[in-house]
Image (tube, rainbow, N blue to C red; front, side, top):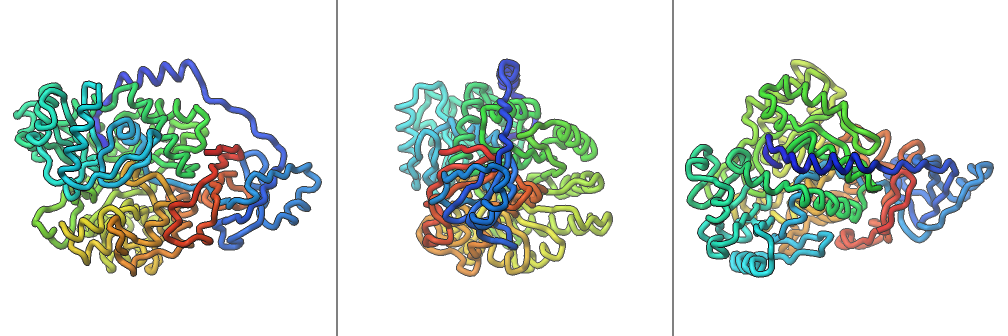
Amino acid sequence: MIAPGLYANSVIAVALCLVSACSPSNTPHSSQVVIYPAAQVITIDPQQPFAEAVATRGDRIVGVGKLSQLKQQFSADNYQLDASFADKVIMPGFVEPHLHPSLAAIVLPMNIVAAMEWPTPRGTSVAVRSHDAFIARLKELNRETDSQWLMAWGYHALYHGKMSREILDEVSRIRPIMVWQRSVHEMYFNTKALEVLELTEEDFAGSEHADWENGHLWEAGLFSVGQPMLKRMASPAGYLRGLGMMSEILHQGGLTTVAEQGFPQTSVMMEYWTLWWELGQQTPFRFVLIPNAMFLLAKHGSAQAAEEAASEILQRGNRHIIPIKHMKYYADGAIFSQLMQMSEPYLDGHHGEWLMPPQQQSDVLQAFWEKGWDIHIHVNGDAGLDTVLDEVQRQQQINPAPEKRVVLEHYGYARPDQHARVQALGIAVSNNPYYVYELAPIYAENGLGPERAADISPMGELARAGVPISFHSDYPMAPAQPLTLVWAAVNRIGSDGKVWGEHQKLPLDLALRAITIEGAWSLGMEDEIGSIEVGKKADFTILEHSPYSVDPTAIKDIQLWGTVFEGRHFPL
């Protein structure tokens, strides 16, 4: 999440220039029926879970079932039999209901120095898991890079040890260095960087989330003091190049629908027009925009004004950029920096933070609730969740709206009594099961302890409580690879090779629903996408093997052929 108030005017200018020069191709669809036989069609339709073939006309599905039946059904339509996927598996196009293209556009052109390997269009980064290895990698990059700045994303204290201005000065006192924490909620600078940015000790003194001695900004301090850095990171050439890299990542993951969960992060104009340009390059996915109430509150000063500004965002959009009447606001801090609000104390005595104080949360929720918006709430810790559930329950009592969709985004750690309460309130959860893989092993030793660490992403208990579950990557918080999220939820294998929370494993059927129909439902689009049914969009993800036919530990390694987006083929 990037600070409210960041306006990359140069990016806007470049994007508008590009938009004026070109416009998206709008090649008409053929009206011919095309029948695709497959080794297996996984429909995610409980009335017909599997099929032999699927038929399309233009951008819609017109038939699903046995191949012989579809041939007979469309015998008078001069159908085309397309055997491209005869030995492959067809699934509904994967749905990613929560990522951040603005962050992806900034992170991907950077140096990635993280504890886990990260696939990028430039190749896979090397996993770095100690303080010495992290500093050695920075020094190596300092020798290799010829750019003015050295910027690196991926630092995590529990893997990489202490970070400070003094440590970064040892890497270089000549080149400005910025290290971006894994959560993107913290930054560290060397002395030269502070000089170039013209940041002073007085600037740091103006925020309680800023440490001048260590060159460290976090949470609110990042938003206020860190503005000069954020503006520099959003340079036009890098940003547009990063969006292109993001598109490659999304396609490689088999995604056909993705949602910006909190639009904008920086600027309405900049983000909309750069997305407009990027999606005009025949990208095989659509973008859904969910207004960011925290950004709009900071910009416009009141919850009511934020709601009015969000309503204006709904007037934007086109065929492949879809604003919807859903909003998002933020409760507690990031799980990747252990700033989520916990009801039990952290083992080392530190405490969580609020991204929006509870009163702000209440004001925003009420303003949007009364105007008929569906709601998404960023919440990570169980104490943060207590506050959120109290407020949702209060709104339901004041202004009952049984059809309103409320989705809790992240749900990093929660108690069994809270799962039952979520179900009783009719709330859904969108979770990032990758938390288990990356965080459970180190949080067992630091901050949470083994018992709570084993219950990170408590999907098994949630499912048994009857709560609808979707998955998201929150990219770049996890790889934008839905099958990796399925693998994480089904196996709960940590980066240490151990199983964390056997009782929290999710059945494969529910995990596949979480990357398809449940993601579509969370966006209010279940009538258009998320399953292979007659009348829905002809969006398919094509797999070389079925998730049902491989060992569960191999799900993330299933190769993709590519996707079909609105009836058009997009091979990898």
